[in-house]
Length: 330
Image (tube, rainbow, N blue to C red; front, side, top):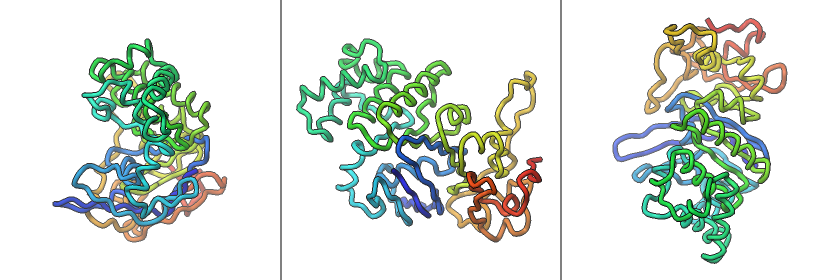
């Protein structure tokens, strides 16, 4: 459904230029969920939204590489052509539904206008479909919710409304950007269960942008671990989370709190800080923070190498020169 090959994205503003995505490749099949995980600022959101023209005002995105969606090349596509795909064939769930929803319009109108625009329904038909969609996403008292404004809904209900908007045109691909951020644990579980159910019903491909490994484990079939605009490790979720190979992936997982941790125990963080993306990166972007770094890591960019199991792909000089069992994260 989606095939991204050697994609780089340069962003330009009046004051700065940077490259938040640098040579990324991955694919997503129909009905599959791919999680893209990494620290804040790793390029996850730009990777998925810049190709759709969803950048803030005053930011210009220059794309290099290939993005083939359902047989159509998106790189170089005009804004007019993108507008036909965006919201119809590709649905989006934004990180903050309170800012993504229009505060001046009722929920029913915001859901209905997608069906009017992309499915050609009349206002009456679109309103009836909006009611059905609110029922589909598990909205309590959906008829009343149609007449409410975003500020009258809880965070969980706003997120359900955002999901209803994103699937109104029955997209083939759904991009979900941190869909559980700022929600309590119970509501998070409900939203994840809802997304899984909707994917099964609509047979969508899903790209999930997140930093939550628990969410990755519960919903994704494959995961791409991003660092400084590059993919460090890519493969099936069970392999990557249980037997991580890249030092960055190991560090992310090691930093997760454990049920065996004593109260007040020391937080296990990664040393150092991510690089500034405005400067060119030589070698491996993670080298300055990596406990396994060798001289070559600072000068040569590591290639993607498929491990011996044929499933996991890793970009690391040290890991790809050793037997996986020899690699430890100290």
